[in-house]
Image 1 (cartoon, rainbow, N blue to C red):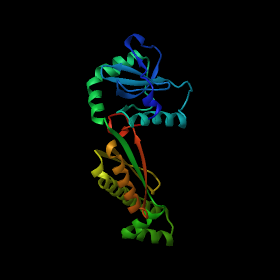
Image 2: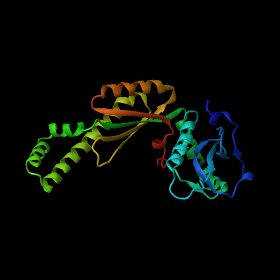
Image 3: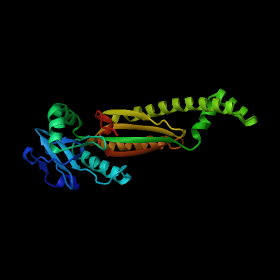
Image 4: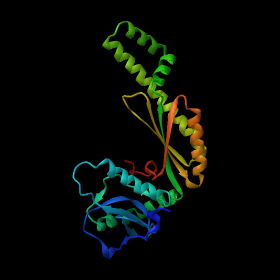
Length: 254
């Protein structure tokens, strides 16, 4: 059991509202236990998880982003949480209660009920180096012909045409392989969300986020490991999680 679940809840009542700006991490059940610098602003059955606004000016550091995500991910292993986009700051705890909790209580409560006992796991995928280019040349006669002509007589026009053919072919492969990952693991999950990477590099494929019941975590992880072994010679898979359900709540991803 981690520190976030051991300590007694730190709650701010209506009479303890602060006029100091606060960072909003997410929405959780009112009975959630917190620790460290974060506290709860409760309203009926839900609460806002808030903390102090970083004092360092400028862009957030990588460590600050990691700490932000780590706090939410730890909570997600023991309680439902609706994560808020990084950088959500409100002028006071009174504003959090008035603008966030009170008008949206029923919607937040329903989402927390749906997420109870679940967490997100994410599978990131990329092709082995140079493999996808070889596949495209083997499967697309037009790409192979352009490639051979370019080797014989380099020309900007040919290079551009080859790049376009390869880009379209790689995009189609990315879609097909990401969907295949989602389909292969679908029996062990509640929902899946595919997000393709649009990169100048050809090796990255994308990621598939899964909403998984924690009681089925071992079965899901075993299935993901089996899939990684099956695709070992073509695609490298990386499993992340459990984490907060960023991809399964509206407006929280980021």
